[in-house]
Length: 65
Image (cartoon, rainbow, N blue to C red):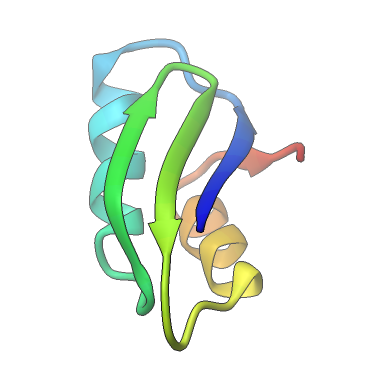
């Protein structure tokens, strides 16, 4: 299933790369596409939205939806 999250605090390509790398460590997601202000990904088995939120926040950004 495709998921999309809005992310606050991103302003450049460095931010995009940081979020991309953070999300690549989350179990159960694939096909990650990040652009300034949002990320889209496909979810599968073992997916937990709290893990996504934690990974993004640990990278220094805020999930707003």
